[in-house]
Length: 187
Image (cartoon, rainbow, N blue to C red; front, side):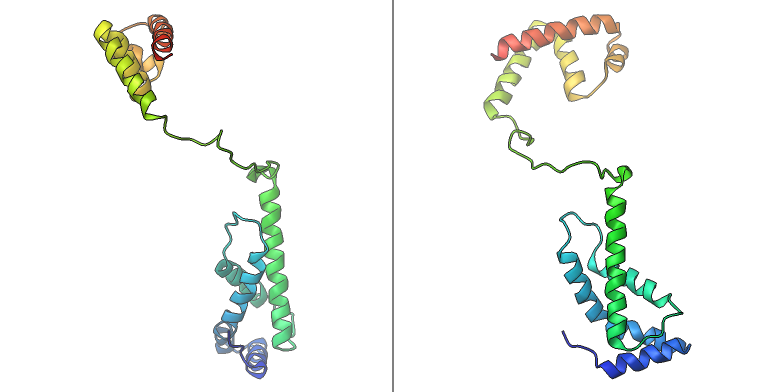
């Protein structure tokens, strides 16, 4: 990273402070690389899962610094101290927002262990279920259709009652039978 000469940044800062609109436009390209590096260093110490990126941090900090008209810049070093402070303030504000109850700040992260992981059932189980459903279909096509509508089409009890023309009470009775029958077949 090549640092911009002190005198060049200081001259642009003084011109911008005196009201030169061209100087304000020249300042960001002069200091952008150094500000971005500073932002990356600040973000490196943050916890994983941050949504704020170094580029956004640079832009927000630059906007805050450029809005301060009452500051008399004493040079490049003073500007970068102010930029570092603005970045710190932004990170603190974001941390406070995330820690709030609206953003789930009272929740604790837990490591995902293998017991919680979602995985495909073993192929033998899938085949056994398929064979049990084929047998159910041969014995009682209505009950096999109930299983298909519920577990494969995702219909609710009310929707299934409408599709099949049965009462919800009858469907509940069939569902209890199906569950017991499948448990006995899959053991």
